[in-house]
Image (cartoon, rainbow, N blue to C red; front, side, top):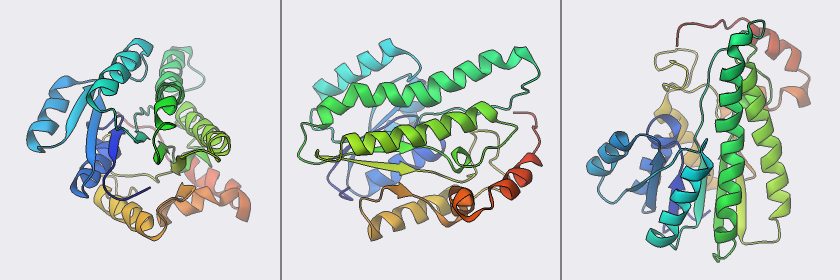
Length: 252
């Protein structure tokens, strides 16, 4: 992916990693469109950062996706980068049926949302001379956090989906990258002050440093995520799972 001169849609970009990516990419000289469900937050971002555009988008709602893509076709016909960053994360107790609705919401947003956005925009991206899709998965897609079972499963599925997408688009103009963050200090699960999580700015620094070294990697894996990413290959997955099992739910 070229570091500058792109027109980039970042889903789930009103906070956390999505917002961080959007601001860094804007600063680097790209046209950035932030997307999210809350208009007030989108308006705040665009007013504080002139040059950034916004579009209302709920990736769990097919009608919202259709409306947003229609708007983008008119307002940003040169769109050439899609970053699927929208996601939610919740604790679950698999012995309690009351959590089934939570699990279904996780699948709808994290997995179906990514899949729907790829289907919605890939035909347009294929018409661009050079385009990129970045799917944000998680290091927990490689070794799950037992207290967030469906979240971890959706991220494992995003990893698998992204691998298939990369193969299917290999002979096209569309590059496919997977970004698999470790725990990062965001509001995703209330870990803004969690010492076990990586500071957001440090994470972003490392991601963009990796992109400078290799502009089109198959995967973007920062050092803090490598333990989980390569656990199965190096035989440490059981130990990692035991370690993660010690992380217990807290109030969100």
